[in-house]
Structures are given as C-alpha cells and as structure tokens.
Length: 568
Picture (cartoon, rainbow, N blue to C red):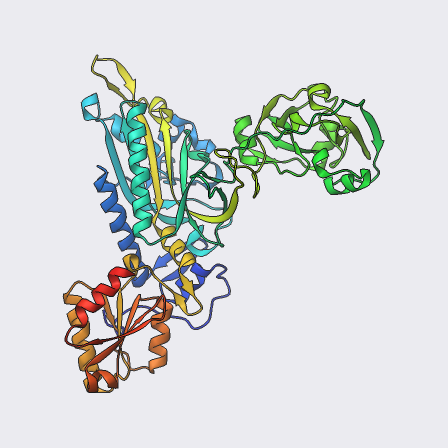
C-alpha cells in the first residue's frame, strides 16, 4: 500500500474525549473514528489489525476441531424467554419490535440461538462432540460506554460453543479451548494471565478469564508467584482468618455520638480495626440483607450476590436503614435483629472474639460481641474482597495484585441451556440425555485495544509483528529525488513479493512528518532510503520497539529483514 492512497488520517493532537492510551492512539493513528458513544468505524489500518487477529483466532479454533458458521444478530425474544434470560439480562440488552409488534433483541451473546439451532438437527451421540463458532458483532447497551474500544456498545467477538455427551467430554473441550486461547494470545504477542472468574449473566459454573496485564485494566486480579494460582479479585476464594482465642466477656452498650466509620470507632475505643465488625445493608429483589465483614475488610458484592442468588443488589439508602433497623447508617449490626433481615456473615467474622459492632440505635455500639454466642447469621460464607498480601488459597504464599484487561473467557455451562431449551440426544442405549455445553468468547476488537495498552511509547503504538497492520514501512527521505524514490519503489515491491506486508510512504512530505507518522502508526520496522542508499547501496533498517539500527546491503536485505522480523 502507498501512503498517497492509504486512508489513514493521522492527528497531531490528542482528542479531549480520549481517556486511555489505546483510545488516544487509535484516534491519532487514523485507525478509528467515533460514530456515537461506544460505536466506532474501523478505518483500513485498524481493519488490517483486526483481520490478522481473526486469522490467528480462526487457525487455533479450527486446529481444535471448531467449525465456523454465522448466526443472525437479531434474535427472537421467545428463545430468551425459554431460558428465563429475557428479563435477567436487564438494560444492557438492545430490544426492538418489528412491524408486527414481535419482540427481538440485538445479540449480546448467542447461547440461546446456537442451542436452538443444534437441538433441531442433532439426535444421536454419534453426532457429538460438536464445536461451533462465529466471529461477529455483538451489542450491549453499556450504561457508560468509555475508553474507546475497551467498553463499547458494538464490538467484534468470537464465540464458540461446545456440545458434548457428558462432563468428561466437556472437560476435554474446556481444556482444549483453554489451550487454544493460550496460543491465540501468545501469538498476538501479549502478556496475559488466565484467572479464575465469575460466570455473571452467562451462567454455569467453572470459568476462566484471560487477562492482558496493563495498568489501565478495569479488572483487578491477584496471582501467586510460587504456584500457578491466579484469579479475578471478584472471584478469588479466601480461607477464614482465625483470631487468637479470648475469654468471652459480657456484652456492653457504649455511647458513641457521631462515631460512624470503622476508623473513627477504632480510634475512639483505642482498638485495632481488626476488632470491629463492619455491617453493610443492601437492597435486593429478595429483600433487605445485612452483610458482615471484619472492619479492615471489604464486602465482595459479586460473591454476596451469588450467595443470595438475587438479580439486583445495591447499598441501602438511609430511609431503608431507618425503616429496617430503626437506626442510621454507621450504627447498624447483627445483634438482636430477631429475624428482621437476612444476615450474611463472612467466614472470618465468625472467628472473632470480643468484637465491636453497631447497636441498631443511633450513636451507640456494642462491645464484646462474640459472633458464635451473640447472633446467628442466615448464611455464613466467604464474602470478602481479596487484598494484596492475603495468603494464596493454594499454597499459602502472599498474593500479588495487578490490573488486567479481559480479552477472553471460557465457561462450563453444563446443562443450563440444554435443559431449558430441551437440546437432547439419544445415547448408546437409546436413553434421552441433555447435551453438556461450554461457551468460549474472545473480544477481537478489545484484543486490538489491549495490545496497544501493553505496547506503546511516547511516540505512538509499538505493534507486535504478528498483528501489525504492515510489518515494514519504506520511507524515501526525499520523494522528489528520483533515484531515492526509484530504489524505494523497488524495495517496496520486492518485500511484498516475498511475503512481507509493506507500506511505501511516497508522500511529498518532510522526512520528519513521515518518520513521526511511521512511529505513531507503529510499524515494527522502518526502512529509510536516503543518500547513503544511492551512494553506498545500503539501507537503514530501524526496529520500532528498541530503536536498534542496522545497515543492510541492497543485494541481500530481503532475508536480513525477514530474519529481523522473525525475532521480534
């Protein structure tokens, strides 16, 4: 491709709307343009990157027995009503009606569609296993679309669905896809971790997220350097912390006027925060809930919601607290609630001695609360948010934290959808059984953005070779110099003919403009054709990532350039 023909409208200034690096650089490098909030057009350079990512994905899916198909984006509401997800999915679903007033949605995911498709044709165990996938736009009406392609309302996703006879087959499919995803993201040149995760609206149990490690990541992850444990902070399981046993002291009510926060009560009573119980009230579709964690811990709302099996969960407002506890926020607690609300206590709370909690009366706390003696929770479970330096649940070493960008997730669905949609088969004995399913998604457009978040410098993008829009940029210092331009044309043609994606900057621009654009766009190698090329038959080859410069002879440069690319 010639730069005089390439549609790549680069920008010198960073648009004010762009917050994260990938959004800034995709706009500045002329790769995307905004159509509406969370909706973007992909310009030719970005489309080349996306196509290369898709090629890697297709090769790895096909290598694991995947078969590509394409399903409708518009899905009838009837399918979602059969599984009960039409209302569960909530406001993120784009809903529409046709002229006959029938309900449809724009597909945020395709479990219902693929299961219905397969159930209509698969009858026998001989037709299983099946692994079917597509690469297609998905639609989710994000409440706050932001960060460019990181959280959009329209995005490109690969979704594969496995259908097996039993859980043994599912385990094989899951492990196969896990391995394939590892290869996909490795081939894309990314640093990532596969972490245990929560299944969310997809459902099922048993899932891993593939996280690209980046400071701009929205998700927190924890990992252990001494074993292979890694998890999303929302999923990470924690063992209870046992306090040293103490003699149980009698309860005592203490006036604490205006003392509402954990740090304030600890200071007021001259105790450590580990001796306090934090009580948070939540409103759910199943009523008001009181969640209890140790004072220095935080409630993991994902874990709490999973324990309650509720659809909605939000912190209770002051009016609700007053009505349910006859108190005000900061002074509520689990003692003497007499079954008014559901109480969920973290495992660590139940191993505390002589603790302090709210008295359910304004400006009062209770001292010497002993959970096993003084109150009986409805549910006792791990509901706290993991923190750095917590012990690893596998080996006990201290955990580390990092930020991550989710680019893929693999789920074990088991029979969640096949039972609801009656997707069954006949086994060897003629007995009808539900298919055992898994689903596996990769955010293709998000992978492109994540690659930039991990590969950039002050001058622009630094693409991994495997997904760069072009591998090499050939730049004649002076487009007006006929000898330089002629040699540049020759190099450009020869590299392309030898399988190297190459762009020629044949614009009549100053050399500095060309070099800045090449760095901004992020071509892995930049070849400069200047006076030395004409006089000494040498080309300057600069590696974008390291700044390392080589001089190659015009007689043998092709193999030299290809060798360099293979090492990047």
